[in-house]
Length: 177
Image (cartoon, rainbow, N blue to C red; front, side, top):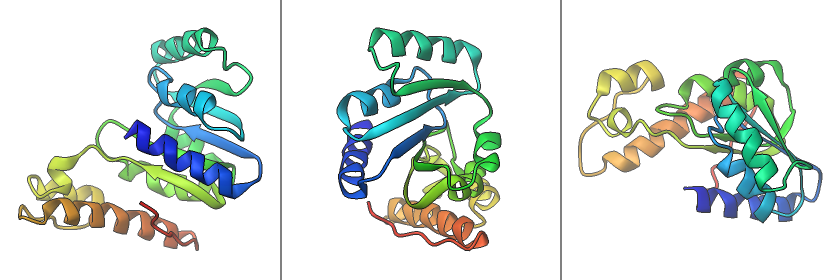
């Protein structure tokens, strides 16, 4: 996942040709943000956010160890609040929470700049792939099935939720990968 996201952001930066600011909502140790800073040319700023102050202390140490202070900045905040407060702020938003990304999608589609890149990872495969349909209905307003095609249905369910969030604020989504 990290390799793929890094490659997608690299391709985006190459095509975008403007200032690129990234918000990594759930940074934990800051690994992704540091990789982006070291491997993706064209990034002007990366906000490595986590709500846990201990995680942010680790992020700060890793920023120094990897010498990316000029690009990566740490943030201790609730990702949902940051996303809700920003409008057209970031060219790239990386959502990779523990479990579902659903509660953060409304804020993310508002905080992403027009033409920006929204990277979403949802690790709640049990609900998306039909093993917990009640949870899927609560998070995604959709019933999922346990079937041969459950992984495809899970991806389509997540994508539908992102599209619905975008349409609520008059925006559109073009799935890339």
